[in-house]
Length: 189
Ligand SMILES: [Zn+2]
Ligand SMILES: [Zn+2]
Image 1 (tube, rainbow, N blue to C red):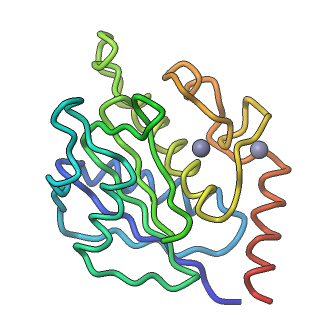
Image 2: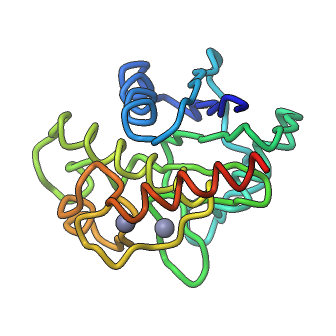
């Protein structure tokens, strides 16, 4: 079976430690063999995708912009995740923790709203890592074909607040795991 591959890109200032944790979460949780590669260079978010009225990036435009700027053509067994140190929204939502665009195999996670400081709380690096792991697995799940899961503990549960992110686990539930396996088997046929 073709080995699945995930590329992780940093956009803006993102520590290597955060990216290493994201990579580890992917390797530990996907129910198939996956190679994770961290792109060494730091990317800048395309300024044309910034909404000056809202002072936020448009999430889908940012991902499309980065993919076209990089000129990457992903194979069906390759996915890309951008870890972005900037805030973004996607209509009709006034912010998003992340976004997945399965048609181009690419997604993004936006860091500012995963940080305690955004909510007037003292910094908590472990909480940031845990939230990043969850959001990366969530968007990757969408890229492999998963929808939102009704199980509030599952990493595929929809979260619209940081409390909801914290309430869910760092893993796919049994049902989502099985679906992931079947998507990959279907992909192989
Ligand atoms: Zn989602
Ligand atoms: Zn689930």
